[in-house]
Every structure is written in structure tokens, then in C-alpha cells.
Image 1 (cartoon, one colour):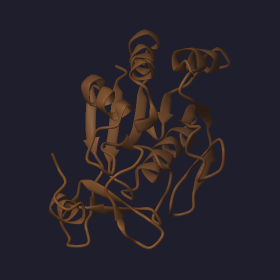
Image 2 (cartoon, rainbow, N blue to C red):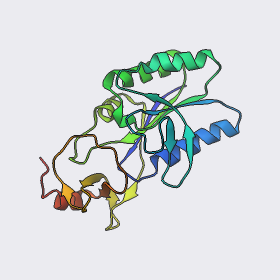
Image 3 (tube, rainbow, N blue to C red):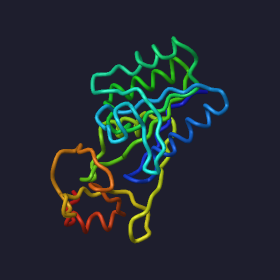
Image 4 (tube, rainbow, N blue to C red):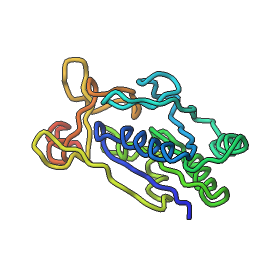
Length: 195
């Protein structure tokens, strides 16, 4: 039975690596997959899913106005797809998450979505909130804070390494911009700005 899966974490936990490994496992067994990533995040190159450890694969991109049900239906018209993989799922809209649910329910294809749970201010991303509400399975991908505790939060830093407490929810970046922390150290960095 097909399901909508949401694999979530903070930055630098290896979500894209896990996605690429899972897609490889399907392909190695002769099953086709369909990979999607947000057009907004082109750090691995436009139309690519890349990992910090240096592996990448081409992917179709979705934007704010993309109809994912239509995109996936068009891909499936060209041949069978064993699984759909979506990277940067935090950038999905609520309607797009419902479209993925329709893919699972109506087309019978599993969807594996990977993304951030919260932004640097500790607020849910819209796509993540919808996935937390609608996904059949939830899996936390874990990484650690500098203290050794589980990191569940992330801070955004400027070019000088100073923690930023305000700004737009979305700013594309990697290790040069974001640091994953446990909640206690996030609160210290944010000046206990939670709430």
C-alpha cells in the first residue's frame, strides 16, 4: 500500500544523502523513480539534488505554482514509477502537499518527502506543517549539536558568524549560513527569543 512519508530534520543531518541512497536502491533493483526538488534551492545546480558528501542526481524542479499531481501524472504516462522522491519539501505549499497525498491515494505510488521542520526562528515551514498533518509516516533524521545533544533547531548567521534573530523565513544557504543546535543552545544564541 502506497504511503506519504515525511523525513524531517534540521540542517546538515543528511536528508538529501538518504534520499539519494533510497532512490539508488530502487534503481539498482530495476525500478524507476521520479525525483523532484525546489527550484528555489539551486545550491547543487538547477534541477539537481546534491549531498554535502558530493553525490548528486538530476531532478525535475517545482515552484510555488507547480501542480505536482499533474507533473507526476505526466511522468507516469511515460512509464511506470515505483516511488516519488521530493527534496526540500519545506518549500511545498499546503495545496502541493495535498497533491502529493492524491498521488499516493489515487495513483497508488509512494511519495518520500525530505525537508526541514522549522526555520531559524523556530517556526514551522508551511510545507512541513502540512506534511506533519497529512503524512502517513513521520521519520526524524537526527544530527547533533556541538554539545553532543540531538540538534532540533538551527540558527542563521551573517558573514561574520553573528547569529541573526530576524529576517525572511527563506534564505538559501548551507554551512556558511546555518548551524544546527539543540534547543538549549539555540535559545542561548537567539537571546532566549523563543515565544
